[in-house]
Length: 350
Ligand code: ATP
Image (tube, rainbow, N blue to C red; front, side, top):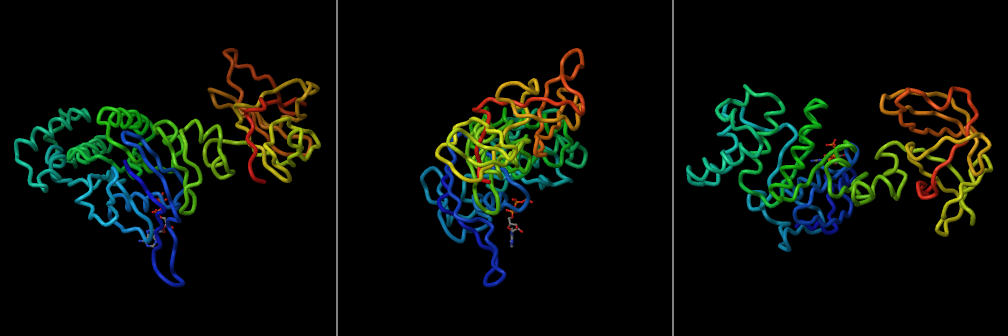
């Protein structure tokens, strides 16, 4: 549906030039929930603005359903945007806000009324149709903003951190709601967020960005379980990083112990990445276990984080699922063994 082909965006010129996007290429499928994820300033919003047509790229092409739209103005693109601040008209009613874009397009009143009703139903706001925006809650405003953006039946909906103003509970509700809306409408959603949980729970695929580049594109499971760089492993979820040296039989840690895992021909300094929920406790003398000492236990309700130090002081955390009895299989100061499945380990750059 959307093809971003080697797109760069440079703001300013000469010594003040700043590259916000650096040769970005990505193809987004029809009916896909695609998320751009990355820290503040990595270029997510800039890429969205280029797709919407609010800014021209410095280099590269953008195609929609095979047609080159790089030079098309925003209003000629079948693309609509939901902004972070909603940008609704506070003194107008909910219904008028939703129909406003259609009014501007000169659609007949009967058609506008029918579409507004359809959209109100879709976002479950029929009862508040006649209220002014200033008389509804933040979560309800979010629904109106969505309905307004969907009303002209765009082929692509761009969403720029649309849930960031909502409190946690409402945000989780709206995550499910957005996913439902995307499924029901079949519209391609391109969603921008810096919240990794939001990206993992809602997306078909995620592109992780850093400093104007896409580092990795994949399904949430790919990105979480098979990060290809330290940045991605670190940005998404919690990860233990263990420095070591790749050898034929596995990776030799600073303690002299060897983690047996496929090194895929790597040599020299590497970093092992292993998620805390993949780390298991074993007896201190268990065969193949790394030796560690428990330094701290932090209770989180669903699980307990067991902080440990390997023999050379390298920290490692295991996430232990809570037992009904409330018992934890270790105490501070205990000598323990640490194991993880060979395929739970990723070998990354040092
Ligand atoms: P956030 O999550 O904070 O919104 P972002 O990833 O969306 O961040 P962008 O808004 O795309 O980041 O900005 C990327 C970089 O480009 C930033 O360093 C920003 O300062 C810069 N930038 C954006 N717009 C302009 C502009 N019009 N002129 C100069 N620099 C800009």
